[in-house]
Structure formats: C-alpha cells, structure tokens
Length: 95
Image 1 (cartoon, rainbow, N blue to C red):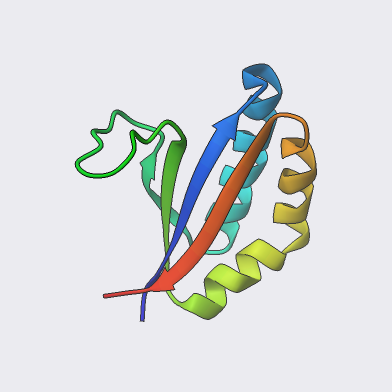
Image 2 (cartoon, rainbow, N blue to C red):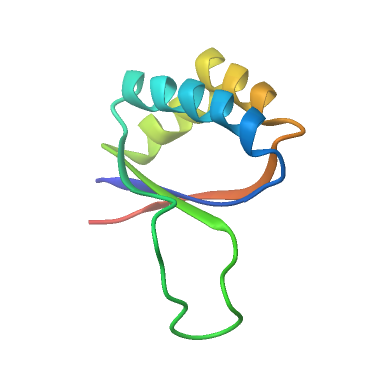
C-alpha cells in the first residue's frame, strides 16, 4: 500500500536550504519516492493560517518510506538542513 511523507518546514536560511533540497531530492528518487507537492501556492481552508512550506512525497510502501528516511543518503541531507530549516515530518499509509 502506498505511503505519503508529509513535511511542514520552516526555512530559516534559504541559501543553505537549497543544498538540502538537492540532497533530499536525490535520496527520494533513489528510494522510489516522487514529489506530489513541493512548497507550491496553498490556501488554508480551516484553522490557523499555514505558514510552513508543505512537501508531500509518495512512496510505494510505508517500509520504503522508512528506508528512505533512515538511509545514509537522507541522513546527509538532514545534516545539510541543520541551521537552514526546522520541520515536522510524518508518513502515513494510504490508497
């Protein structure tokens, strides 16, 4: 069953964040993920105004999403994100 990684990211250093984006994209591709949304325009429909960058990535399975997150490739990306952004990441199984 497919799994969806949902990230809400607060970018604090846009220049440094570019390095994270490149490394993360490479890791996502290596682990069969594909971007569904990557920080595009959005509208808050209910609740407090969303101000974070929202990213949604589809993976073939929950296990594959976990492999991606734990991978050495993504760990390098996470290290590059330090000082550039903070985030909240969840993965959920879906259709």
